[in-house]
Amino acid sequence: MLIGIMSDTHDNLPLVRKAIELFNAKGVGHVIHAGDYTSPFTLKLFKDLNCEYTGIFGNNDGDKLLLSERAEGNIYCQPYIFTLNNKKIIVMHEHHIIDALADSGHFDMIIYGHTHMLDIRKVKNTLIVNPGEVGTWLYGKSTVALADLEKMEAEIIEL
Image (cartoon, rainbow, N blue to C red; front, side, top):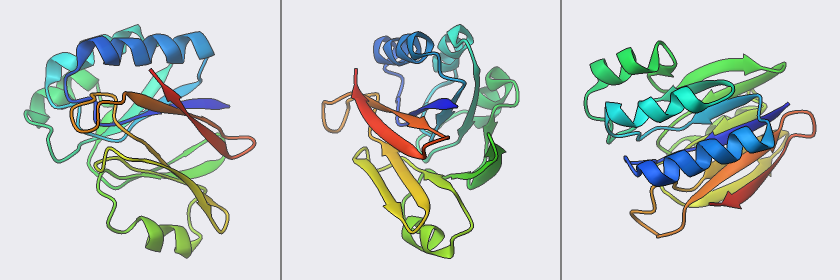
């Protein structure tokens, strides 16, 4: 199963739209957002996804009540742990305990955001992915990740 991973969209609607178009074109089976949508109006674009999505709140998400309502139950508090395609995944926004989680061996994949910096690596048998930032507000480079849950490999795609 191919999944799309995004984070730190920060209301940059043209680039969120571009990410969704890419995910649809690649035929991803699920999208994971690692937090910082920022405003509820951004979620209107997620209705154009051709698959389900799962997200978490980040530190810059403002109106969590309206975000929850607009997400129709698809955004959770962090850390959020779930199973997708028989892989145990944990999604976080902040990065502070990523290495400890990977060392624990409890997860097949760890997804995080917050730093806006790209990170794809393996620690033991755990794939760690930070897709960077969609919004471009910190580093000016809009990126997402695609991950293959069969091969447990990921790649960064620049939008």
